[in-house]
Length: 405
Image (spheres, rainbow, N blue to C red):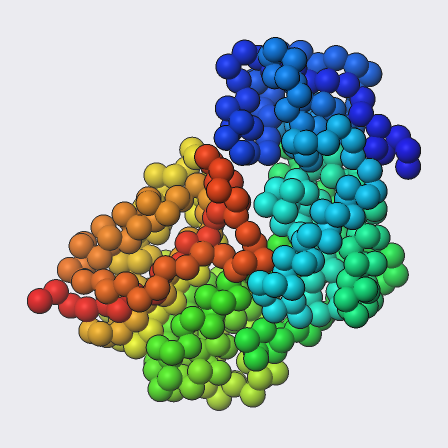
């Protein structure tokens, strides 16, 4: 365990480089490095120095990744168990003050100053996603400390499951992995959010099993849904649809291309006694919306919660086309004076571009949008104000949609 905290060498930056780091970011890229000295190991701790030898902090190195160093601290020269415990206590204390902790994201990587690791809590189960080689070495210690800190808060964790099966692990030279950490348990976990019950499949569900980042956005659509006819596109396991149903909607149709997602959504509807008003179909949203328009269907509320259409800067143009298409199709299906909730979860679709794309869609179909709310991700997914705002990704609007005067 001693070797875990050992600093193995120094990463020296080129003159004029490290701009992201100096602006508050947490990464050092491979093309910013002048030299690496010492007996370094990938995944091990290193000091980062500017070109003139100025100490800029400590992080872990991975020469296999374009992100060569992920910073752990700008102040200390030493990382130890006490350092990690302080970070984790800060994570828990922050959530206690900002969100309902019954189910929430407890650790959000760089935004919680623990780069490369995400830990979600679903009732009494933890789901861990480790995306960087260095933090992977600290993972057992982090989990052990977190369980102890939660126990002090009266929260006993009965099981931990790892969902480190994202493709980005390959960029770190790591294999994808999923499985139990410690004793096995039933991976279908029941949670309650905004008064809605869900069965979360932490083993086979998307990402860590459930999208906690929309927690308060789901609640925000409720005032518009009483006695309404609602269409929920990209419903996943039915979360927006079920919130609409709980708010007193007359009828809700949820749509998703995943058969597994639709089956889980139907199970969740039954769990909440909403099967008579909330139904689901397995279809491609891009094909369904034009067909509904042809059939003359209109809705009081349309909800768009699509997956990220782009995960890189290279495909932004195609993503813009996709967002524009579904938004203009959705607007055509909203009754005059009805409501549209629309969002993007892609970091690369920045707030300005997303806003511009929605405006273009409205202009194309001659609709006027009256903004009701603009929201981002739930506070348990905090974002840091840095130059690149790497941790800000979710943009969520609610509009009233009106025909042009």
